[in-house]
Amino acid sequence: MTALLRNFFRVEAVVDPQQALATAGPVIFVGNHPNGLVDPGLLFVLVRRHVTFLAKAPLFSMPVLGWILRGLDALPVFRKQDGADPVKNDSTLQASVGALVKGRAITLFPEGKSHSEPQLAELKTGCARIALDAVAKGAMVRIVPVGITYAEKNRFRSRVHVETGAVLEVKDFSTGQGSADAEAVRRLTDAIAAGLSKVTLNLEQWEDLPIVETAEALYALEQKEKAGDVDRTKAFARGVSLLRAEQPERFDRLKTEVASFRRRLDLVQVKPAELTFEYRPATVARFVVRNLVWLLGLPVFLVGMVVFFIPYWIPIGVVALTKAQKDVESTFKVLTLLLLAPFWWALLTVLAWWQLGVIAGVATLVVTPALALFTRWYLERRMAALRDARVFFLFFSRAALKRRLVAEGTDVAKQIEAVANELRPRVTGS
Image 1: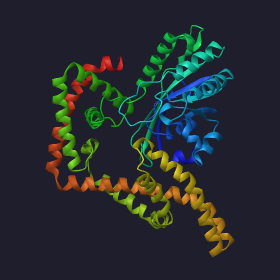
Image 2 (image 1 turned 45 degrees about the horizontal axis):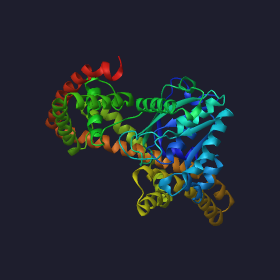
Image 3 (image 1 turned 180 degrees about the vertical axis):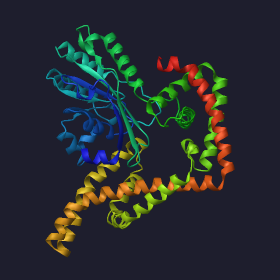
């Protein structure tokens, strides 16, 4: 599972300034929940200790998945919307409290469900109640907010940014009465929500995301910095909310200009950062030589494409047939690959052994994983190179178009910079 998740997604950064993912003693890792079972899977990979998960009860009755969950010591959560009796949760909550009292770590997703909404859902109180009950029994529980931001959560090899927030000391909220103190439960739940909001990207509507991303990229362009900085993108999202609430007319004007510019870039399939590319002879020569060298790996790549053609398309077909919601697409793909990859590996090994002998079988057993990784890596790099070449030929043949886009982008970027400078003290606190 660990190897599969690390290869399915690219964890681009783990921002953990307090080393909270290695926190010892009783701790609850709480995360936002945009991507089904992939979210707890990522925390399982990243947290540097054994953790106990809570998962909705119906998952435990599913073939294979139920076996995996039980193997991970997961605990079932009984939800009314699943047709279960919520009273059964008493034993789960007590088991969670008991785990904390013993100094263990648990992982919770207090939104109560995975979803594809642009902002955090209202948090359930279960996390606060478990934590306060454990503290009432003498456990020094800490809560670590973990924000998970996916670039494209349903795509293979998409980027993931993981960030931990300020650690909460549950004793600071406890009155010694445990979950019986409703006010303490409310205050702790609010603190968890505030902690998660600082490490996640919260938008009022998904339509704002292209605007925020384009604005951030244009600002980076103006500052001569690299676009796609997650912290800056989150700050821009908070700035958008402030601007919309306090200066709606100015927000609408700027949104219209950014959206219009974004549409023009989309028409020619260009990103803001690509407007600054300078095609000097030496740069072009290096690009050509590098890609000629890459041709040496083409035969191996083509072999890989043939060998893995079927397992590549089966997970995509499973998602299409099941009509999976966006927030569980990756879960279906990962689980399908978890079953399919060992089977395909074994099948290739047996066929090579049967048709070509023992040496071929052993070689296939050893080489297959490396071939799979190389094929995926080569495909990614060549797709990026093809894009670079297309942008080069576009701007090389249409220099006037580039000049117009650069001029328009610079004008919009200056407006964004003015707004960013105005709102920065309130958005970032600096």
